[in-house]
Length: 234
Image (cartoon, rainbow, N blue to C red; front, side, top):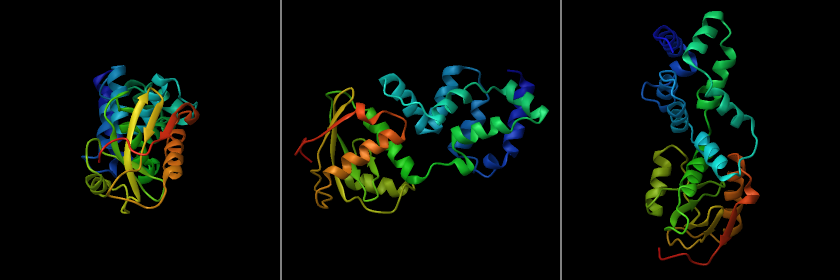
């Protein structure tokens, strides 16, 4: 990567409307600019994954062997091949449109930004796949619109506040409980939260969990989810 190419790309991207419209501290804006400041493959993948939770899930599903072929999964691999030298050459030739659309899609800027519901489910799944097999359980909340959310070791009330603070929605959970990882692809959950109680939500929670897995690019049929009456003390 030459310094001239890097400067040409940075100057262009700072004037590119989808990026220029974002505030200076925006994660996607910072990540796209940083992406073209290094040629290190591992660092570039890390930058992409920090900016887009879907890219992290894509890697995790590959490691677990449950990844489904998807167009956006292919795009993640393609965008990692974009370099400052290559993009600078395309900008000089006026042929950068395809590369810019790829950046827009993979870093989800402008019109490609993920909706709040989708982002909440991705964050929930990252928490779920971060659980240790046989390790402690994790609290989660279920919302009436099929959204699930988790916050590590936080209480259900704290998670509800985080949900609103992060701009993921303004509603209140209708159910909650704990989830535990029993095997690499096997989980168990309950609905024993004392904070929320809205009828029998067992089927709704299971359906939302499986839909989220499929929508994020994995084979949901490979993942087992079992309901138990009570996993632990709330």
